[in-house]
Image 1: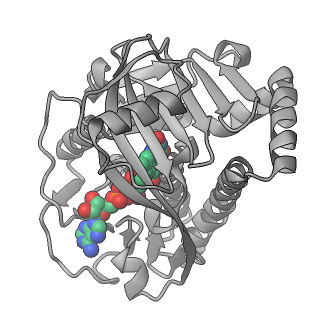
Image 2 (image 1 turned 45 degrees about the horizontal axis):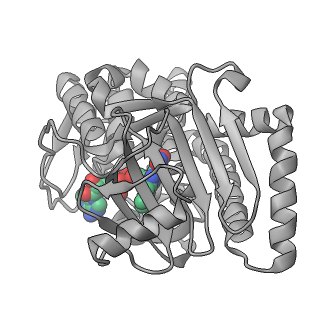
Length: 368
Ligand SMILES: Cc1cc2nc3c(=O)[nH]c(=O)nc-3n(C[C@H](O)[C@H](O)[C@H](O)COP(=O)(O)OP(=O)(O)OC[C@H]3O[C@@H](n4cnc5c(N)ncnc54)[C@H](O)[C@@H]3O)c2cc1C
């Protein structure tokens, strides 16, 4: 019998399994999808990875497995109030950092996690598995099975949440102007649009969270909406990849743990992608749980011990709520079309942009 069973071999479940396996815990992972295939093509799905997650992936030997063209650094960020006049610029050098983060291809990241897990003798992954995994199979059962977690539902761990009535449309695009390693975001009445720089200086990953569905628009109409929304800043934009859409929800489990069970990643909390923090919070969940399992082992406690798991919950729940709360504040502030909110927003952004201290605090929080 293994020490830990994980349901869900997504970014969060696999990285946790690998980190726990490398610390000497035996881990079995089950996922219903098939084993991801290695590819040399960029996918249209990316993740913005903060420095703390990058450090974690680096220390687990995952980062080195990702070819440089699939992980592009960004060293500045601009946030534009598309409904007003405010704008904020952040740069890595202002905070003494080499970069603010990386934009990583999701398929390449998953492939690197799979390769590292294959090399770890304490970890075994069962793909295309329909196994009905129940608590008691191991000392600890981890639900890392995403926002629609069956583990959470089966165990009756209650959640609260709501739909944003927005769909995030994602695709890759080619721009006439070079991105200059800057991650750009425009807050529009329709919803936030992000253009994240890729390793090619003229390619960006587009994430546009919108009340209208943009995935079905004719190419020409989509490209002209994109050009207009980005205020022509990137010059002419040519779509280079297929578009896909993701309905957006905010959701929180009211309890992450019970005796022998822990939730992590989107199974515990799903937030709006406007600041690219969902997977980063999930990586932090995994890191924290491994640290608590090691502390528990020193105290002679088993991985499923409720005392150990409660320490994990205490550390992660507060931070996850605070991040969700901040994202929600941004979302409401920027989607409001009330005149007074618009004026305050523009003034506030200008004040923020002139304050190096406030920007440093914000970068520190976003860096994990
Ligand atoms: C448009 C968009 C953009 C985003 N951008 C960013 C970003 O830039 N940065 C960032 O940090 N986050 C971002 N996020 C959030 C991020 O994608 C998620 O937080 C992250 O993927 C969650 O990972 P996870 O492993 O918890 O869940 P998932 O990625 O959902 O993985 C769950 C896994 O569980 C498996 N599974 C599910 N049910 C079962 C079952 N019953 N049995 C077995 N296996 C099962 C699934 O097959 C899957 O492999 C974005 C989200 C969206 C929608």
